[in-house]
Amino acid sequence: MKKSISQATIDRLPLYFRTLRLMEETEINIISSDELGRRLDITPEQIRKDLTTFGQFGKKGIGYDVRELKDRISNILGLQNHWRLAIVGVGHLGGALANYVNFASLGFSVVALLDKNPKIVGTKVNGITVGNISDMKEIISDKAVDIGIITVPATEAQDTADALIAANVKGIWNFAPIKLNVPDNIPLVNEDLSIGLSALSYHMSQN
Amino acid sequence: MKKSISQATIDRLPLYFRTLRLMEETEINIISSDELGRRLDITPEQIRKDLTTFGQFGKKGIGYDVRELKDRISNILGLQNHWRLAIVGVGHLGGALANYVNFASLGFSVVALLDKNPKIVGTKVNGITVGNISDMKEIISDKAVDIGIITVPATEAQDTADALIAANVKGIWNFAPIKLNVPDNIPLVNEDLSIGLSALSYHMSQN
DNA sequence: TAGATTGTTAATCGATTAACAATC
DNA sequence: TAGATTGTTAATCGATTAACAATC
Image (tube, rainbow over all chains, first blue to last red; front, side, top):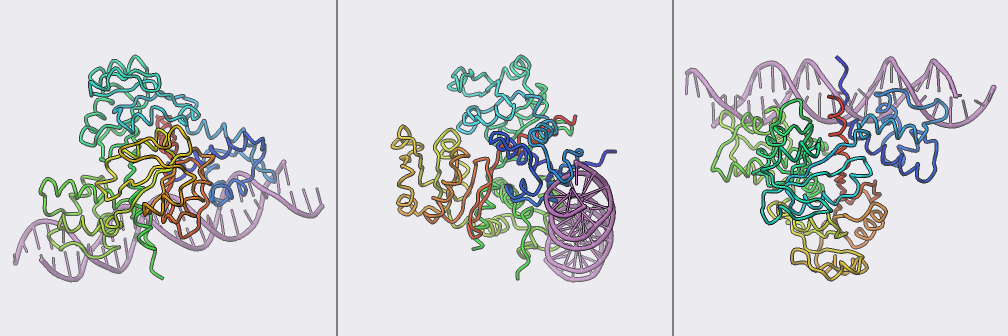
């Protein structure tokens, strides 16, 4: 069995990717773990350790080729798959995500929007017509959706997850503040905004 | 020196809080670490360990009083401070956060919105008139803002953070995908959506 | 009392940091 | 060559899990 890679490492890769892309734009060609670490407040040892989990990308005495490393990380993260997203729940947050420009620059595209509210179904958000949740299976299939984004109220989140899985999405990004039960083979990432805000409150209270 | 409490523990407290509040609503009065763990997919040992970091809240052989534990966690997280929030950058995401109902239920209130775009300044979002960023210092002071939420583009995020700190906010919640430099005494929480989505892409690619 | 469940210490596991040989 | 910097092994640190005495 292949040794599993820590979530901490995986979560740092997007930071490396982001920084490398910025460097590429400013025409920096070579970067050392030291300089990359300085920019991100991560130790160079940590960066080298993270990278060698996936291979040997650097040159001793020189550093890393910015473009090459960026492309390698992009591939490790699977960004070259150009995953297709469906947003379920076109409220304020869902609508904001439908307009979120950074997705495209990471290779994701929002291809479907779904809601159950008849006042929202049929309207256009960022050029996409909102479909009815009751037509989910057909829409997910027609639009070849890979990832379902859940931005419905917590009370409806589990049903939404079940429906998305029945419609054959390959992964779920959940913004509802509730623990979802999904099969082991469906990757699930929770984006619970109340955790970050509560942690901030905690640290502010310590001062 | 007091032994510092791990971020992992702090990040689990909001989950406990959320679940306890749900239980309180359904009139469950007593909960064991076993049952709480079952609902959240966290081991009961982990929960007991987390809680005893802050005190002894349970009764041996019985469990925890739901309401009492909920209130204790609320206090540990500092939610009783009823922090006042200002959102800087009223684009899609900032606007969505201005309308985010879950803040209120955690004791936070959005009291100010700021933007630099003259087309947005002066408009009302969720009943709050958007102020001009150039008046930040005065607005933050007048509205007694505690927390600055950064939803401006990455290129403007550091300047925004500097201005918020100069205006005496006590903490920063940053949604811009960039590493911010802030003084040690200003708690900063980053909410980088591209990390979660990239991690999801990674796990989907492994299948 | 017997059964249940906490609080806490000890053991394990995993992640980060330090050190350094290899080498460009 | 000398200086710089990677890749990797060893040491340390910290978090989770296991075990169990205390006690309701």
